[in-house]
Image (cartoon, rainbow, N blue to C red; front, side):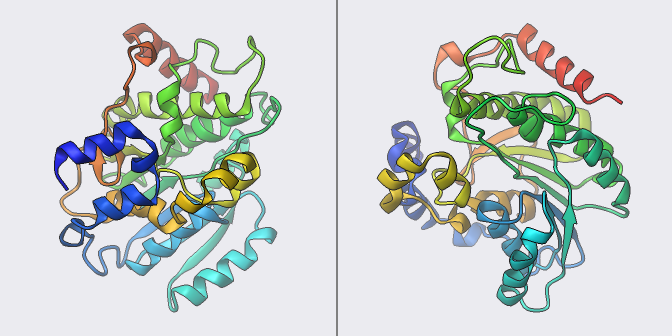
Length: 307
């Protein structure tokens, strides 16, 4: 695919984010695929792995040889997930770990149980509550789940992750939002979709800073396009019904995560990706953040996760 057509698909959103964009772009990918067994002998940790993108990510990482930790809020409800994955990837190693990443105390306890080198950490867990909801520490739930918990877990595993790869699963919805001056969403009428997009903007904005902070560990953020997942169906049922014929499968949505986790050589760190290419973090001037806003957000997140 030519760069011009690729950019047109991305800017048009609907064709670029749907299965059409995936099919057109993926025609040129086979030579660029991660090599077979690229992750043999390596360990991966995937949050939000019970279903959807997380489950598809775990399956593909295991197919490449990784031992995969499935991080879920309720291990009892995820037993079927493990059985499905073991049937899908016979002989693979799957470890079921219980941790609610929105609960910072639970994240600290969980990180203390992980020993040895971690080669891949995928922050995929996501929520979109209809009403403003708080985590056990009093943080707005989307902020706690998408930003604070992942940042804390990454920091606590910093020594385990040295020279590894960290991937945040964001959303193209972040293009609609600037960095929020009120990250806890205390001052405006709450809208779940807006809160979701705002926290995804925070993920993308902080990625270059986190990459510099963690170097030589690789850090990237990606967005999967529009995928048919249980989370989307539950949170946006009307949108799902309207777009279902065009939605990507979870495996298609997870493709770039897998590519970032396993391709060689390692891609450039600190970037935002979609369909195996870097993408601009902004398409509209009104979403661009100042250095002061970026600094304030980075500082707030680190203060919020401090012991």
